[in-house]
Length: 379
Image 1 (tube, rainbow, N blue to C red):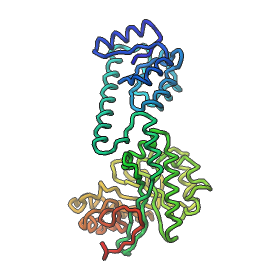
Image 2: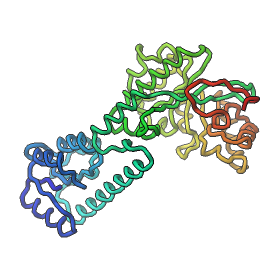
Image 3: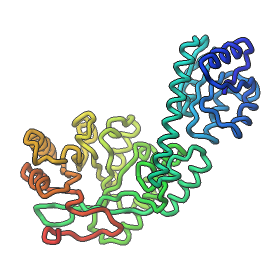
Image 4: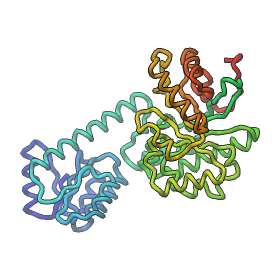
């Protein structure tokens, strides 16, 4: 769909696209284009920013309320930083500055068509796998699926154990839902991101964690994962938060990449949370990001070694030697180390041989709805 009110440019673009084999619907008014999109979903929307009826950014905003996937290419003869930022935040695939050459338009259109095709294929694969609503292209469908997911949200708890002391050290809370379309946590978080509902998801998770804290002995420690945006949402950890009265029993996990990407505001927020009694963990260390930089910045109480480093570590002496060096360095800084993803006795023996005491993984225990007990003799 081509939306352009300049007759000369509209004719030239239409000719270029038709000559390349595309079917083109031509409209010269933003409001008319929006009405057409409600009944005719284009593979690509190519629109001017300065339009009668409805400007290009507003058109994009309304399109995203209808269809989350259609690629949108925006053109303008009067570029500004504000409109560029708005376009990108609303998911525009490309932002052109006029005059646009035909080759540039065709390259962007071909790329957009391919992206849309891959999105549809991904949706079909997930439908085949049973995730029928996980990638709903229309906002209404995704919102309905997400609401069902929130209503059936629950937490699975996986033990983290001290091998030397033969006891449970803590439990990590992992979000789950009975809504099969979003049963995969990655899909659930992705849906929340697309709908701008991360705060609602976090609040629902915190409510479930609060219920668990009230129901278990006060000596139990729980780990809770944080999305980077949770740090700057002050309502999630305010006085009325279900977690506020249990700060001393909670360890807040930040992924290594998230920790590195924090603004000064977010880093200040980490300091504030620590002053209130929360402990901080850096998760996924060794998952392919920037080494120990995040550890140096955050000075966490706990560092979790990613399972990608742990997997088959008993078969890789150099990797085990590297892990041993990291463990000694962190121990010297007073930080606890947890190895995630322990699945075999050989992996467990290898990591404990270089000083790792806190272990998590399927060998220790799988996530479940209860905070289960554990000892070596029962595993």
